[in-house]
Image (cartoon, rainbow, N blue to C red; front, side, top):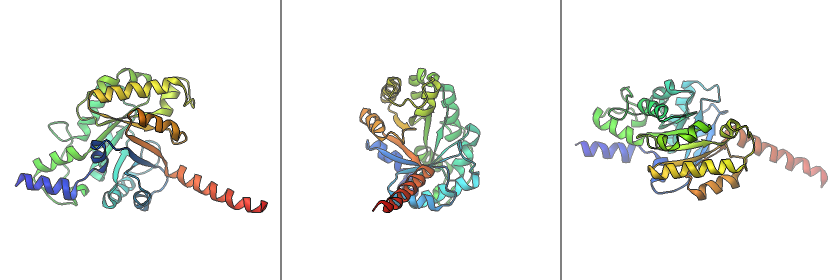
Length: 271
């Protein structure tokens, strides 16, 4: 019976497409949600071909209710919903609301990474508390032992490197059991060095090389963040071994498309 329960959870109900693609060595395309509060954004992201979206609660005024609704819509659409939380206190709430993973900003040490693991994972790996039937399980009730194990396996934890201190602890952080992926926040890292906006600076390439090496050593993955305006540089880091790409925000995509269309129309004046 337990094996049958796990089969239902993992194969019919509980699927993390990001984790599945990472296991196959494929590159993940993710979009960031900061503007659109309607659940339609989940279906748009899926139709556009994204593997994942993440609701950015760190840099938006989104409520937990709005975040949960978008996450549930993403689950139904077959796209992996993640949430970048403002801090560790929000982790269990966004996971209970429908997120299938958390992006932890400004992690600078192994101890900080372990705090996020403890909040995101059920025992024995962490201390996440039981919340009853969850949207990830279609609100079905399953024996706790099997459900908790399946949720632990499906839930992805991404920590962000955004400072020199984080880089100096790259090996120790990547070694933390329960951390799945390290995403470099390129903008904040450059700002921490006093090099804001200098994307081509060799220190950024060195940071990616160091992080990729540490993650390979410990069987983890690397993500590219903050390079929506530098797709060629993001592609370079993918060739180096990064596998998760944060491609940009809903606001950025909307503004770019609107700007291009307005320019196209105004150019009719010259014809």
